[in-house]
Amino acid sequence: MTHLSYLAVIAFVALCALGINLGFRLRIGRYWRELFLTQFAIVIIYLSWDTWAIAKKNWFFDPHQIVNLNVLPKVPLEELLFFIVVPLTIILSYQTLLKLTGWSQEGSQEGSKR
Image (cartoon, rainbow, N blue to C red; front, side):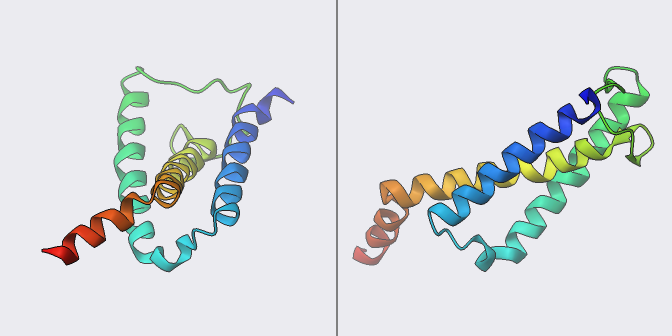
C-alpha cells in the first residue's frame, strides 16, 4: 500500500480544494481561462525543472511510494498531479481569504472614489 502514499496526499489536498470551492461558493469556474493558462505555465516550468534535476541526479522519487506511471521519463504521474492540485489549492485559499476579509471589495471601492 505504500506505493499509494504520494497519490493519497495529493487526493487529500484535492478534496480540500474542492471543499473550499464549494464551501465558500467561490465559483472558480468563471475564471477557467486564466486558471488554465496559469496551471499550464506552472506545469511546464516545474516539470522542466524536475526533468533537469532528475537527469542531474539531484532529485529522485522513491519507487516504493509512487505508482510508477511516468508522464515524462522518470517523472511520475504524482508529480504532474502535484503541480496541478497544489497551486489550485493556493489560488482557492487566496480567493477564500479575499472573500472572508472583504479586501477585494475594498480595493474596488477605492478605485471608484478617485
